[in-house]
Length: 332
Figure 1 (cartoon, rainbow, N blue to C red):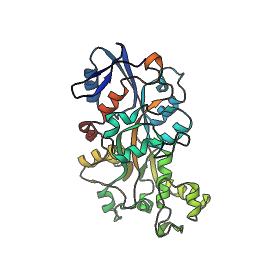
Figure 2: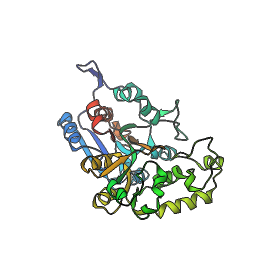
Figure 3: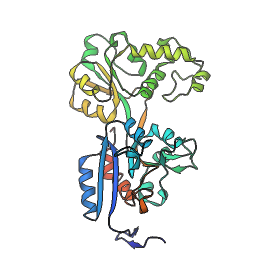
Figure 4: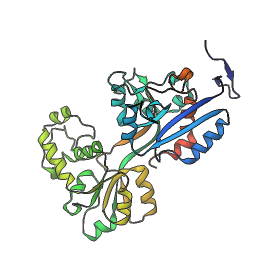
């Protein structure tokens, strides 16, 4: 029997549920402004519960989705943060479920088409598909950028960073902070493969580099074998002082490194408050990312403890309203 509906002042039809509704969220730590939580709790009033958990790394969230029986696991929450690059394996392993009736809600209609395309995925492969179901709601996005100490490079008569191969300057050996994410590091290495200074000639139809997400088949088609890639990754590793997505900003500010690669959410504020730091998106292209709300396959706070809470659409719409979406843009 369907739930009864009421019409709100703005004409929206809303289903009426019994008291005792609750919403359980597990978010990536630092991805939600505290004011959001205060405002959403106030909006719920005293008739609904709201629980927020946080994890320090996306890997933790992914692992917990696969272990819903663990104590306080994110795998039974109503909604969880997942990075867009984790969507494909999460769908393939049936760790998450599509969002029911997503297209009927205002939050979906407010999403720009590019973000709709990001989360509409094939149910089996997990790859983007125009005919697939909707598996998430992007709420925070940005880009991988490069920040460097302009004064240090100038003092040592070195070229400023303009593209990814510039990271291989001999003077930067042991002076770079890379992301601790292996996928991102390999992507950076791939972006430098076809540069003339590297000595690897690629069959790229006139394009000097290949993409961040190139597959083994893409590399083979470009005339680059596995051993060449491994050798190049080793060479790039020798430029590193540290691999961290937590200490990289501090290391650059303290002068422990001259260059750091990281998320725009971390590096834009650093550049704004540090006159000696230059910030660039490499001219040969960079990687865009999005944090996405997804529903665990074992979500249990819906009706009869099955599926996500009926409060889920309200949370998704709350997070991507124009005023809040501007706050979480990872770059300007």
